[in-house]
View 1 (cartoon, rainbow, N blue to C red):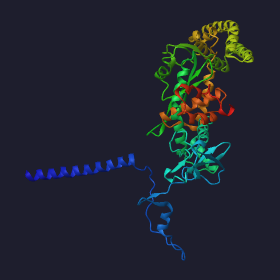
View 2 (tube, helix red, strand yellow; view 1 turned 90 degrees about the horizontal axis):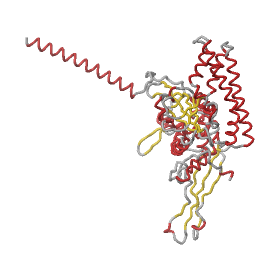
View 3 (cartoon, rainbow, N blue to C red; view 1 turned 30 degrees about the vertical axis):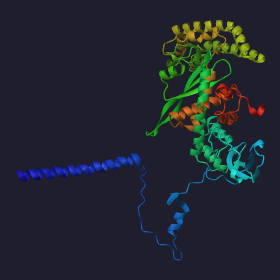
Amino acid sequence: MENERIVELEKQVRQLLELNEKLRQENAWLKRQIFGSKTERFLPEVEPTPLLPGITPPHQEESIQETMQKVSEHERTVRKENALSEIPADLPREERIIDIPEEKRPGLELIGYVESERIAYKTGLYVIHYKRAKYANPKRPEDGVATAPAPGDFFDTPSGRTRYDISFVAKVVADKVENAIPLERQSKMFANEGLPVAPASLEYLYKNSAAMLKDLYGRMVDLIMRREILHVDETFIKMQVKGLGKCKQAYMWCRLTGVGPPLIAFHFAPSRAQDVAELLLGDYSGTIIRDSYVGYESLDCEVACCWAHVRRRVLEAYENGYSKAEELLTLIRALYKIEHEAKTRAEKKGTETALFQERKTARRESRKIVASFFERCRALRESERPASPVTKAVNYALNIEAELKKFLDNSKLNIDNNPAERLNRGVALIRKNCLFAGSENGGQNLAVLYSFAASCKANAIPFRQWLEDVLPRLTTTPSSQIDSLLPHLWKNPKEQ
């Protein structure tokens, strides 16, 4: 019995050892999957091929010295050429001297300059060569050397040692946001102009620009939410899901002022859920112009709906062969003609108040057309089969009849939500060229910067010039004057 017991225990020990080895291998495999390289490429070691007679092999240490350098008793790989390490010598240069105020120079003599360079951009790349004057008193050497202050940079770095002028930063941000040029493509474009700069360096400038503008963005949102009328809309954009190697659908939500100088705020959210609408508009007490998306239905504010959405559904029915929809299209066209004529008359007077007055007068005729439209909708609903496109179109209109009629009683309301929808075309261009947002933070960075780009465009302001002026002033402008940096109040210093 004792021998059988020993044999059994030895068998169990062998099984446990085998299981332990198996688990050890599985653990090592998992670590490689999580932390190791994913490549499956295998390069076998082979005997070196004999060289032809008369050819000597290169010395191995010489090849290593070309890519390694000695730093504090250890070796590291030499950094690849980048704009941060060496500014190309063939770029045009502009010299700027920074001097000490004249009243601080009595008894001092100029002894030289502290020199530095920055990459800048106007109509092309160039370099600003800064020379900071140095002074010393030859009679009092113990006083040391007085040096002119560093030019500083828009990140408010005390040393001012950035290699990028604000003009270059504004160029990168504007091309990414306004012109939808990805940073990787910009990197290649700069390389073609003789400036090697990594996409990661451009991304650093882009992200920090967004970070600096977030407080100003918050102030702009606060002003937008005080307006009595807002256009609201949302459009999709892809967001990369970390670790899964795929993208999910996220959304850019837009809020645009319906009266007063145009201000636009985009908000990035990973969903189109109702709670996002509550977050953005839950405290709003004015009137929103929107489509019929159910995500807005829980809001307590007043709602006016968009006639352009109605027209699209009616037009779809007409294009599918339902000629009875033509009468509805004619009535909608008449409404838009009245709106257009009122706007044209108001533009001659040049004031928003004139537009409201012209609308108020013109919409007396619109009221009759709207009444005829809904009367015809009810008749079609009774006569057409429920599944037909024309029935679906009239049901859509009848379900939001009260909201569609709101513009008749308030001349400040636009007839449709097209101003917000036109803004979404810019998001669609970004979506096409840049494909996706890298993360939720990246999406909100885009929302902040695109909000200012759209607001600048709406106020006929060059976005790049606005960035060049505003970014360096963000940390020096008193909070009581911060509104002066917003696009609708900003004054171009070059025009003053």
